Image 1 (tube, rainbow, N blue to C red):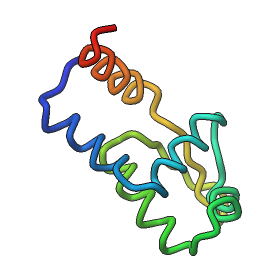
Image 2: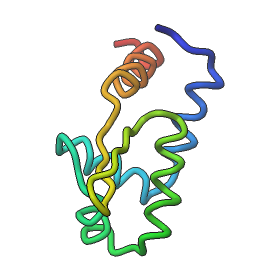
Image 3: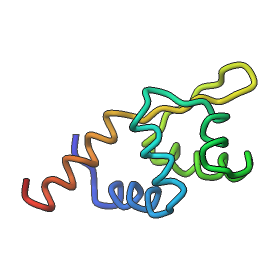
Image 4: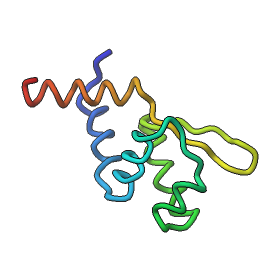
Length: 93
């Protein structure tokens, strides 16, 4: 499924922050991560993590689920694939 350029712009806006890029990379390396693991590795506060995860979740690059008192996050592989195809089309691969 192809999206309008405004949809892709949301992806890039979500990934335009260094912390969110780190989160994206960390989630790409794992199937799922607990918020506690992200907090440990990023050395940020829980409200700051929530802010960044909200942005990544709003554009549907990340799924979240509650696990007891913690949140668990994973990449939405369909949306990531869509972003990858868009970038490949731009660079001609």
